[in-house]
Length: 230
Image (tube, rainbow, N blue to C red):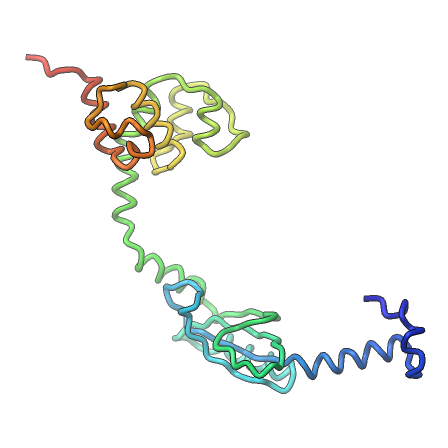
């Protein structure tokens, strides 16, 4: 706000706009207090369950920065996330950072430690198995017929992707990792190919068939290979 525009309104105080602004800042400093919070790095993302330790209210920002610097430069373990906040002096004893987070910091290696803990926490075996099934079952479906540019762009979730010119280029674009967009397209192709010849008539709806895509694609593959020769 440009207080100079309102100088006539407070001229009776005998203050210039600069002096009046300085006094407003002094009042603001009295109403907002600095705090420092720190939390130990775990595999869990920030949320209501994050346990913070609170330091404050502190005298001023200089004291708050000294605490932040001390915590950030501490020798782990434990690794720490650190927040310096400026909070309203409203009597609320907040258990977590609120209001304006003025400065954030972390101990050296905190981010790498978090990512390592996340990798240990998440069991990737299920995802890897899904990717293998996608490569073995869904990719052959997608390569079984010519695709339109609209189908490719919708499946790839990119309206700017160029149309692959060869089967090899299309296979490279699809990749061998599970992708929901490509899976949806493969489901629609299989349903068109099979018509009423489905393992379960309830799977005629794409949203239902998608839940059973491994079985459905294997059935499609077996149907295409034809009956075994004697």
